[in-house]
Length: 97
View 1 (cartoon, helix red, strand yellow):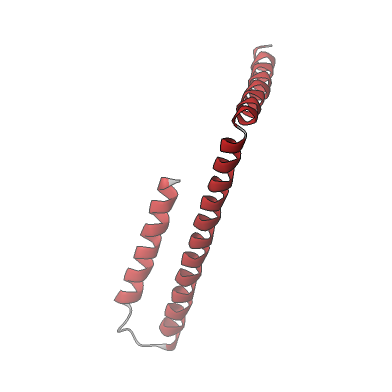
View 2 (cartoon, one colour):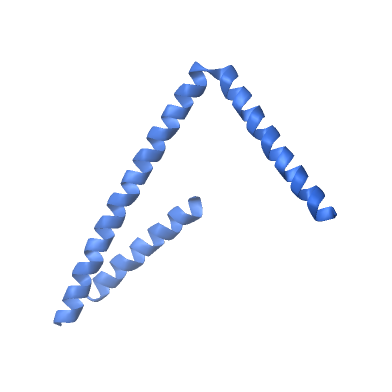
């Protein structure tokens, strides 16, 4: 997740640098491309903000649910672990045959 965040930040930085480098370039196509790039950057920032907000809200809900029902949360975790372990053991035994 951290790498993706860094990559998105680097992409936004590169796009802004490109816009700054072409600021003095005249031409209808360059102007149109700059407008589209600016709109895409704004859209990407908005989407990233929405995703971050939803992730934080989801984490808060999950945290609250675990705090309200700690034994159920532990039981669910153990159950999921047992199922995953069973499936992995079964897969490994088939590969060895």
